[in-house]
Image (cartoon, rainbow, N blue to C red; front, side, top):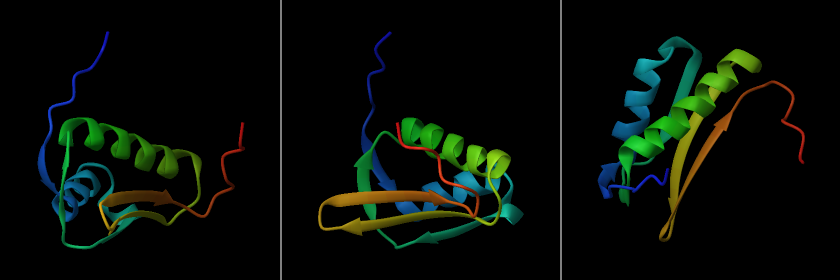
Amino acid sequence: GLIEPRYEICDAKDLLEEIVSQIQPASVSLKSGNFTFRTDPVLLHTVLANLVQNAIQHGRGPVELEAWKDGQTVHFSVTNSGPPIPMQ
């Protein structure tokens, strides 16, 4: 079915720290500025946690989780040292 987002103001650094603490803190480095933005924190947490877990399981460390803001746009990045996922 259709998932209805529940938007609220979210602190980027707090969200990423929560994700890292719940997965494998020793295997993930975190980079984030101090900013807030409007999102559904439950849905975003699910997506980012899944990407981090995949990077840990299927890639090579270290895994880096990063968030930054460019004007009104918020960017997230999950990287590791493994081979890239092929473009399709």
